[in-house]
Amino acid sequence: MSVRAEQYAAEVISREQLSPHLVRVVLDVVAFASTGIPDEWVGLVVPGQFQSRYYTVRSVVPREEAVRLTLDIVVHETGLVTEWAAREEIVGETVTITEPKGSFEQPPDAQWLMLVGDLTALPAMARIASETRLPTRIWAEVPDLDELTGYLPDSADVTWIAGSGEGLAATVEALEWPEGEGYFWMAGESSQMRAIRKHLMRERQLSSHAYDVMGYWRASTGRQPRAVDPGPVYRAGKAAGLSDEQIWQNYDEAAER
Image (cartoon, rainbow, N blue to C red; front, top):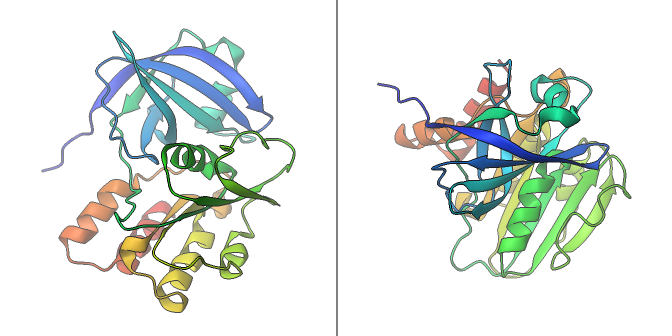
């Protein structure tokens, strides 16, 4: 029996254009409970639509009557949420938020973090880096190197790369890895993520507990946010006894339908 995900009504408190490609939307949500996982995401359904798109929760601030969520939304040429977020008059509107889920699971003995992603991964990388105490290196591939230079925490060692996410696999293959045990997190275009999972498992021979690689969008359909929630796919795969490689292959196939 399937159980429908919990949903919450959320009021738009503010909208800010952080850059030509990134809009910050702040929401007040009553009875919302964060997972506490730094890459947690929620489904967002905007007025006039019935289909959700998934976005990273950039920050969570408990308040007396509601929880204040910040979502940094990557805007595209077209899209369900892009057209809505482009409007300055969205403040005061009510949207629907689904219950949060996350996948970041840093091993207790990790000595360092490596984060790699494109524009769509910036909110998650910013939150992860701001909440960890571990030495953190970030490789961020973005269309404009000067657009968001102050977006990531100063505590992280950041390398900015010009591009739209198509070069992430090559970036990771050329990395020099630190000594000792650590945790690798990465998100971006799905085909790039498939290549990196194979590299980490076959070339680096990393344990599945040492990394998390997520496909956020597909080049074949343009830069749209992920329409498939990876949480249920991962849990179902684990329950069926599948390997991580088999689970992520199932996720990639579901995302391409």
